[in-house]
Length: 116
Picture (tube, rainbow, N blue to C red):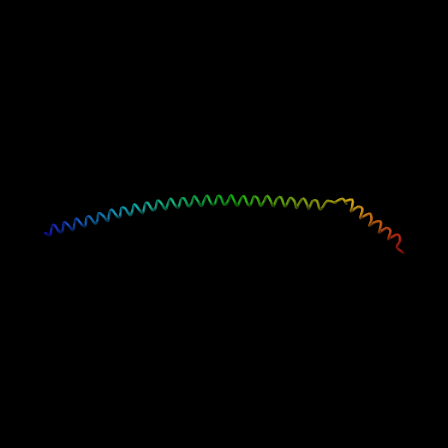
């Protein structure tokens, strides 16, 4: 085999190898770009999911707080009503009036019959 033919064979092999490297490099760059696009999509979906979760959580917390505030307002209204009721003079029941009258008569009888 002559030297020119050998050199040509090596040159052809080198060019073919370089072409394969360039193709592989281009494919790698494309794969990296595809992966980057996929990651961007995953990140955006995660952000949207996080935002939706945050909104649902805020609504649930607001609902719990609102329910607590309503229950508290009802209890406070009940306490205020009971406090107002407690400050008003309450009339004696018939049984209480009868018991008071008996006690007054017994005390009067005791005072009248007690020695000075």
